[in-house]
Length: 117
Image (cartoon, rainbow, N blue to C red):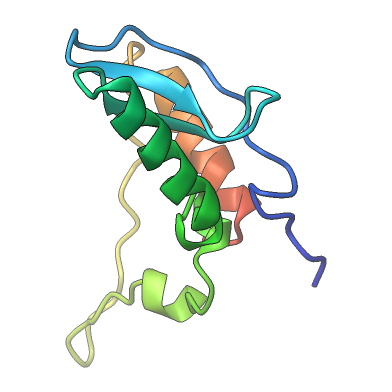
């Protein structure tokens, strides 16, 4: 099985969205990678201190699911229990709300990339 690069090796693409006024974006890397959201009301000293602590422990943060070692795929999968003698019935495919279609596609691709599905 090919090794999936961790987000420390290949950080994910970022899309910055507006945040509430009490939050702000901060990057752990100088090249604009490894994004965190922190409180905007921190003093500059506390802000710097927090960023340094996060940098020292960046490997402890699960930036994406591939960074969580030891997840067994069978733990994430399910099994449908049937009563003895019953036959499974295939349900017709249902349409996805058009407003959610892109979100669903992105989530499915993300789960496929990390071999959960």
